[in-house]
Every structure is written in structure tokens, then in C-alpha cells.
Image (cartoon, rainbow, N blue to C red):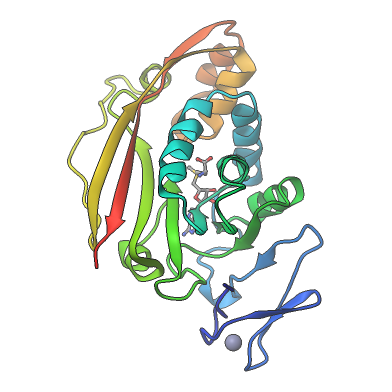
Length: 268
Ligand SMILES: C[S@@+](CC[C@H](N)C(=O)[O-])C[C@H]1O[C@@H](n2cnc3c(N)ncnc32)[C@H](O)[C@@H]1O
Ligand SMILES: [Zn+2]
């Protein structure tokens, strides 16, 4: 299985250090081992995706193991499915992707990680050679139709049509999204009235929801860990300087996690 050329959609083949298509479009492999398949004309901004600062905060936080139960839950579902090929969409700095690769080592041939943020993919590829990483947008996945057995999407955007296109009939998508109480103590520092996330039923056109698992646990964070957690959230930009200072001074900040993990089966 190979990538598709983002310009003409023909298969790319690896020729020494470059991926090339029959039309002669060429994408060089970076020294860290990833390939950038996001042409300038498909970029919406100069540096799309998460910033370097967010990515480094996420790496420090994830490395400390605070979200390991989420990774373990998804690994269990993946082991049951035993996919030959797996794509992690919006994989960031690769913490989950590498965890999947390690736990599926005997079962899965190809493990791909994709993110629109080049800085995240550079860090991911440098640390985790067991995964094939590319810079690309989830709105135009550089994979052939019906080519993947499993796709994971953890807190990352993706068009449902693209998921339905690339997943094989009978294949799966696993999504992880925030549950109602997710990080509510952190939000409480920023918003006067914390709105619980709605627990509306979700749908994914072309897929049938097969399993749903709610998971959550309490965390006790040191100041710097709580700061890193805030940095990796979308509400960081709303936090006033006093909030950052108060969090940094915490010795045991108590905060809940709440996740919903769903397994969706491709119809057909
Ligand atoms: C909240 S982060 C989650 C990262 C990782 N899955 C995790 O949970 O640690 C969302 C990720 O999606 C990426 N992203 C945002 N828009 C994207 C797009 N259009 N295509 C691919 N990735 C995108 C960001 O760069 C970021 O790494
Ligand atoms: Zn091409």
C-alpha cells in the first residue's frame, strides 16, 4: 500500500529518498523519515494545525502518562479488530500512534500517522520510526479509496466523506471525543458558568455505531503539568494572565477527564 499523489491522485512510489508519481510529481523524504504531502495551494495558512508550543506542551503532558488509560482503551478495540492497515488522523506528536504500533506489532503491517502541522510530524517521525508519518490535511487524505482497515481520530477534525471513502467496507473508525465533564475544573478557572459538553448522539454517515465506551478518571497535577494541559486545549487563549499564574503555583490541581470512545463499522 502506498500514498497517493496529492496533485494528480496517482500512486506514489518510493525512489531512494523521494516519493514520485508517474506524472513526475516529487515529494522528498525528510531526514526524520516523514514526507510532506501538503502542497502550498492546499494550505489554508502558512503554518496550519497546532503550534510548536501546543505540540510541546502536549508531548510533555502525554509523556507523563496522564492519558494512558485512553490509549489503552483504544488499543483494546484495535486488538479485537486486528487491522492490517491503520491510520491515525491528526496524530500530533505521535504518542497514541506509537502506542498502537507497539501493541499491534504482531498484527498490523502498516501504521500511518497524519497531521497538518509539520512541526508535530517532524517530532513524531524523529522519535517513532515504527510509524510512517506524513504532513497532509484530513480533508484530502493521501490514500486510495477503500484502502484502510482502520482509522483512529482522537480529538481531531476530519470530513466524514473522506473517512467513508478511504475505509474498506467492513473496516472501522475509532473516534475519541470529550464527554460532558471533561476538564471541567480547568474550564472553571476560565469561564464563569461552565457549560457541560452536550452529550448529543453522534452520527458518521456511511458507518454504523458498533460500540461506545465512556471512560474518565481523576488527575492530580503539579503546576507545570496543569499549565501544559491548559496550553494544549482550545480554550487556552481565553485564559487571563492571573489564571496561568495561579495554575503554575498549584501543587495538586485536581481535574477530571471524561472521554467517549466509539467504534464505527463501515457499511457495505
Ligand atoms: C487536539 S489535537 C489532537 C492530537 C492528538 N490526536 C492527541 O490527542 O494528542 C488536534 C490535532 O489535529 C491537527 N489538525 C488540525 N486540523 C487538521 C487537518 N485539517 N488535517 C489534519 N490534522 C489537523 C492539529 O495539528 C493537532 O495535532
Ligand atoms: Zn502526481
